[in-house]
Length: 313
Image (cartoon, rainbow, N blue to C red; front, side, top):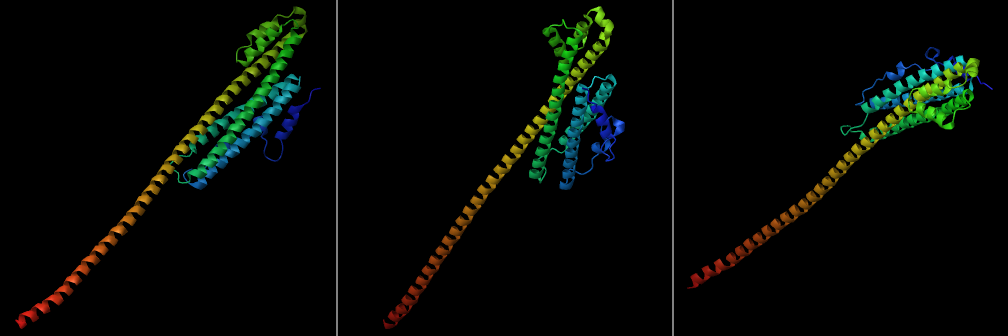
């Protein structure tokens, strides 16, 4: 039984809550998402940029959910016009989502923390978290694309079997593999055109058109999956590079801290040594005074006696 999922989705687009955009095939208004303000050199400006990236990631996830819904309707309907509308909606949403993803990648490069920031710890945590969220959204998008690619392959296989019951499993798999690798639909066309004339007169051409459309869908999905895989790896490399840079900064900070501690220890030793030296100087000075006092006493005693002896003589 065919379920009109497209009608439900189009109804959602016309909701009065302002989230849908009927003029964009179910997409969302892009300009507010791509417009940002805030000076990333300040804490407040940096947090505003991070918040903007989070909003963009949220939009990506919403778009992927809508794409998945349209893809579900494509698998459940046999109506050519409804299938075409769903395909157009998927293409439009996919294009918008790719634009947002490109924008998010650029923004992450702009807000990547460096050693010149005094609030490095805060920036590090915020950047790491938002980058991981973006990678999760990329992986979710890729998962949805792979699931639909698999389902489309199964649909393509059924269509070929219906149109050409004599097609071998190897021939069918070759047609599906060619689509997944982004090749042309030449083999699928040859496979379909090999059916007998009676069937062709009964509408094989429409089935051939459907096969070609399925083939094109699978090829586009394969390209999308490849692009998402490359983007995921780029974000993974960025996160790893950022972690390495921050580890280097932290190690440098630790080394500086150790050097400061060593310097403080040297200063303390110097203080103790200076105090001991001053103490020794005072001791020497005291001994010198005592010697002078003793000499003075001796002289005071000796000189009067000498005078008395001279007087007596």
